[in-house]
Image (cartoon, rainbow, N blue to C red):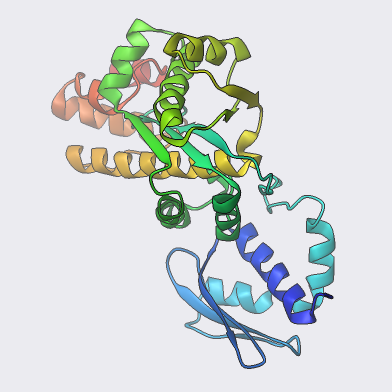
Length: 312
């Protein structure tokens, strides 16, 4: 059956919204068109696409409304043509595409952040849930704002309920593990292996996909030590797989929540990352107020940042 002009418009609109990292909160057919409610995580804007090609954008004046008004339906053909072979985000990474495979995707968050925990996430995805995740606009968490990512993580939990697992290594536990195993890639391999091993029996998966972080043998050996028998695929930029992308969102959302809780516990906002100049400034404030031992509770001590904070 030939695709109608409205169907083509809807497809292109879905692609555009996903590429911006926004969310479609709801959509429905209306007379002579299709109506959406779009959110950037802060505000929501109603948009109606008509069979005539006209687009009606409502809601309060905002950057989101302006961007939606600027989207030109006349560019639909070129958008579809350029995104069909491999859907690209504005930042250059590929959006996930359906594979139809039942598998576990595993990813971590926090390994490059001085403050906060290391979070591991494993998620089982099959053909049914993959379709829903792709419709949701799942992609590498690094390409999403915190607000959109947190909301999307809740939707992923709903879609894949009972088929995912989070392991949170708070800073104190992380520092003990690193002291016992002073090799980050080996620590990551063990954490990935334990997460996959705990999830696999509950979903009966035979394949796991992981974003490669070091020598392949590290994770293979770690899985062997746990007694887990599973086909393992490790490759760079594995977030182009739906299961890994969804796991990356779950892991990063948990990291953001945990970092916010740590911030509340010490009464100061702890920055993300490792290069923000405020990381050292805030660390020195914390040490001045609570003593150097406070860093063990909120930060990853093996970062060189620790020496910049405590050695003045």
